[in-house]
Image 1 (spheres, one colour):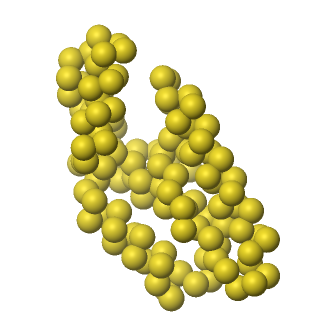
Image 2 (cartoon, rainbow, N blue to C red):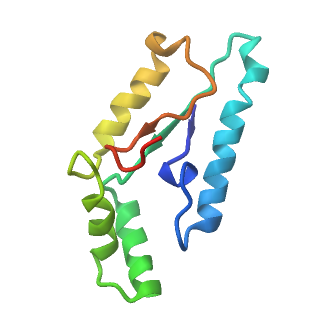
Length: 121
């Protein structure tokens, strides 16, 4: 299992290098075709805005670069979430638990979004 947040599905201004590395994770996930013949499933989970210290750092750096107020970038992203709230670590953990379970054993090479409706594909 691999990790490729929404930046691996959609490029964001000022996050070009980060986004490109996450797009690469998705490509490696799709290369799971090589491992499928051995019965090995490979999937990525793709969270959105998770209310963690990482977003505190992202918001602070964006404020430094853009001149926006601290908290503005976080609020901008959260306001675009269809379900109306930031994701929690428990939301992500529940999905990862599903992907690691036998219930997902017929799924491979996929990178589903679990982003509360921020990016639609």
